[in-house]
Length: 182
Image 1 (cartoon, helix red, strand yellow):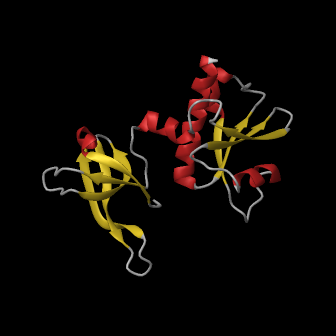
Image 2: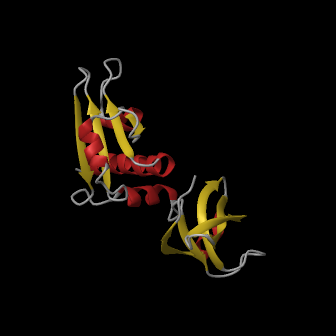
């Protein structure tokens, strides 16, 4: 069972990272006769298919699952065997012990793109306040200052980009707020 959990973590982290980049979708694992499916090489088989209502890239079973799933807690998986038969599964972390979000955070640290973090103490010229995490670039964590959309009153990103060394990650605490990232 220990190996199964490791493979679930790989699949879950891949699914959540793909969701952050492409939006809702399904993970496709396609068995190819030249490269038979093997749990030991699971990551070589992953492909993410983003949901697009204008295309029919996904079977109806997967589309129905995608409209109701929570990408932080579930993975939509499509398995296509060598004969072209497709099975769609909605996998939940309840019995497997880790959510896609937790698996992603285990690999990438506590920071998740689009999440708002509060800087609790100054880092050189960067003052305490609320910042939206965007990405990591080598040893730097890239944030932008949080602002408010004047028209709608929603939390939004500003044009002010902040880069701090990842050694300062403990200066930030997570909040419950999230903002979409492009």
